[in-house]
Length: 411
Ligand code: F3S
Image 1 (cartoon, rainbow, N blue to C red):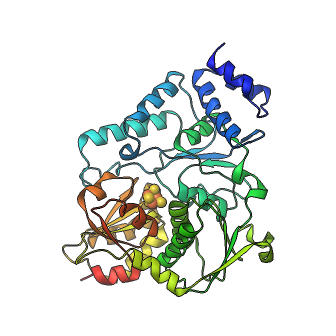
Image 2: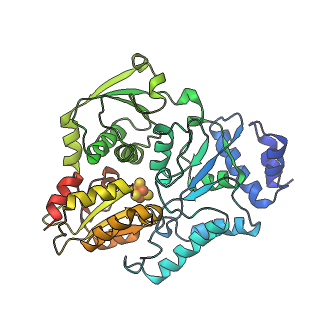
């Protein structure tokens, strides 16, 4: 009896005839192994069945984070020449494909990174290399089931767009992309999407970094729970992604509601939410104070976690007010290739670059090795970036509003 058969005998999950054949190896070894993974995850989480997905967003791209172990996983898949069966996109890599030399990435790293990207491409995955697929034409629709893996994209898909996805790991999102299936549990089910905590936002939440601080505060305090935010004004997609990414990174939060904004919020009776809590100005300030450890002049300013939209690039431009950066300031912005190369962005990009700002695509300050290896005194407007960068002992971080950052760095 083969391993596949042994596993199929203990499966308690309901599988269609076609799914059973996939699991039993009739569609090849690679598909069988991927089905084993999906079924195993389903069993652990007590899923009763598998469901089809509309799209997949796949992490596990940066050579800095995946290392050489990714290649043995690829070998298994490439033997059977498997391809994705639903629209699928990639998370950021460890470098900008065009400007890797300017980023001071070494040749060995670049070679491995290109190999990883090309392998995913061979499987039919669009090489978007971005954590904001919803900014570049891949907005999920309400109620759609997905298998997304980047934590900031997952929480936006669930909370802002009302689609349904668990936070997939890199292998399970790839397995879902290829088989078109995921296990039906967690946030795919309506009953698991209700809020646990109502947050009355009393603090002034105006700037994107304020949203980021609110998300950080919630994630740290209520790990894994679902918030319902009331009394937040002037919510935009850009500000929401700052808040959502912070909650997801610090507290593994994968869904949220905002009163009068997010799709499910209207269906929720606030009185049904068990725990109520107030987010005050003091609590907001505490998050800014938590990330206030830089000493003297910073050696890097970095923006674009999550990847910037065109409006955020325009906002940076407006704060520059036709001035240039002080001579010794390194200012790195991360965005997606699609945003940077869009016709609408060309004047803004040219203007920003002519004033000393460096704009990189395909990667970010966290998943590329270059920021950690070359800088130690960093200013950012993103609580998620602050959280990850400061995990390196030698890095000091300051979290600040973008407008104030710009005031400090222009001549
Ligand atoms: Fe995106 Fe990198 Fe931040 S993947 S959410 S820019 S850590």
